[in-house]
Image: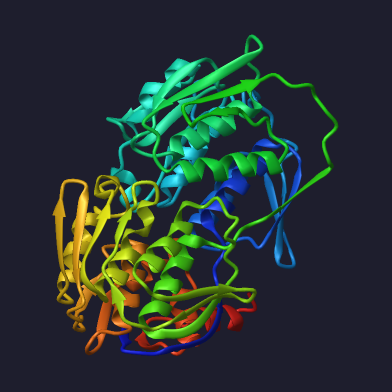
Length: 448
């Protein structure tokens, strides 16, 4: 479905969406904690729904109580089998299009002795999963893959041992292993995961924080190179765990950039104390001399003349799309490092950004790990395509707010993957749109 956005001025206050990075990790931790957990401010993106579906398939029960969800995973037991059919596939999980879910939940599914098929949809079917072919057999887990792609068939249980892994592709593989090791019995007094060339370190900080809040065994972190788990005494745990999902800096980044481009607005619900990597969008805004300030009510944004900036997005590659939208309205050539992190996203984002923003008249050069965005010349309305990538759709929508003429985004509802309320939220701020669906209105009419 398409949506058309006209040049607009944004005014008012908006609350950032719930973080899917925080929500999905909370679901995983609630599963392996094998207890009752209450998750406050839960997200409802497609990725969040995939995570909830996975933990249900692995034995957790989920109930909605008011604005919260309650997860009961007392029946989840490491090493247990729900069936004696050892030679049959007795369970399956579907990760949707969520890269975090496939990389995080595969080791957790391998905690049991069930044979489990793991699959996904869309672009996830083409993403490389060879990591598991290499690592899981070292941990006593059998695995069959489709030449390093989905579907996977695994059978555990995981038996933690000292291993070394490559962290250059994604930190998400490490997140899954950390959660699996935190609840698995191991020989000796300690066991370690050694990581080379780890990317996106702030996301590991988020993982470790979630593990601590759910009472899991948190490893000793030695400079993000070695994570050592020590045996600890069994202690009485609270009957119920409580966790509040953070505001999402990834989705919030688009709101902040929209305000800097076309607004006089306030964004609430984002904490500067967060460990989320995409919090660094504030550094780019300040470097660009954007109209940007923080006060007790949130972040204040207003349109002003901006200048080109330099930014290293190696540890926060999801910021590339909003950074390109920002750079388009900065005078001069902005330089963004970290292009090598973009090839295995929902689309090859470096090339996709170059192509789709090129339709709006923006020149983007790619040179190795660097992206050069030649901004300040203005954009023109055009017909662009999301490439089924949620962040590309939002980046084009934000850029369209100050373009000359209307911009139509084809397959615009790719946003449902991470921020299903995005178009409705910018409409409430004054964005002029046509086509598409009024998602909040539909939800209200259905009593949801």
